[in-house]
Image (cartoon, rainbow, N blue to C red; front, side, top):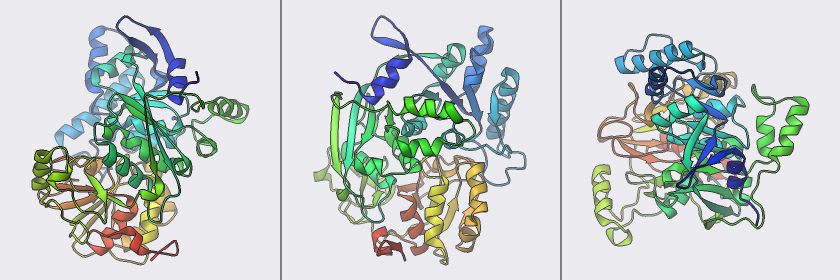
Length: 469
């Protein structure tokens, strides 16, 4: 019997099996940031040991960094303490750090791919749930807890239970105005936030293969939002071309040799998955969430479900009360207060280009606060080089410095209580973007159009003969 993509990569990294069904998994790359690493460093000190393979660790500051005046000392005490502690720990233990002010600083799941650190066939972990982003390259990537961060620092291995496998196939051609964010929100709306629990998901099909690498990252990023351990996409020519020439990519004959191995990373025809789902790309429309978890999503022209249409009427009622919405209501036309474009889900140069392409020559609605936070200093620099910053500024958008920002309501980047924000981030939990904030998840294009119109719209109505109008 053949193997799945997941099994090929996982089996190659199993050091040993232990009683009880767990396995010792070797970790190729360990990404760390300022929030989940301090206790792990302290644990290493208390053990009186050094970090086993420090060259396998890359650190950056992203969660607690301000996105305004990044050249000045951080005002918030806790944020400053965490960022300073990361700097001190990396200096003490000899860890490579892309801290504030560094040309490679940025969100950990943005800088890994753009620097060529992320490669097919790797195992990658980080003390952050959205580590699944890196699975877009055919890597096994997943989030770990602080005690596991310490475990990897000490041994470069993890004691883990092998997940089950799932394949989600999306075949067909995506309609106009439909992006990868719409695909993953559609999938989660169908499978729920627990539909992937205990599984590693492989995304396949013609619609997936048609996507750029940055779009694939968006899909794998949100695998965690349906309860999955992680997501993967088999590498192909799109993957190889993306990696080629990047800072940490192999060169010359080494690159050719790497591609030969990477090309073997796909699920065999006779591979068996524990679960399989198939969806049609033609059924996906621009998506928007109405509730307080990413599974509460609908096509933008659809109505919010009624209590008779859901499995948990009480949860629906609680969610709609928080959001100030009614069952059976349509969201089209609802006034929006804020637009946030950023996070490890949608803050790459491709996302900024999509926004700039639409808002060029236009102005945001006067009542809208529109904030764009690039995923890294490299994204920021490229946006400036391409003149996107001028287009965004002229349209009334505020382009800030890189960081996690309003995705999780850090520092001053919070949405006021009771106000609505359409966001390209990954989570819409109660208080996620600030106490009482009301979040609706959308694609970058939908967010850009809403910023100009001032209310919820169907992005397809602003496309004529394939061109944005």
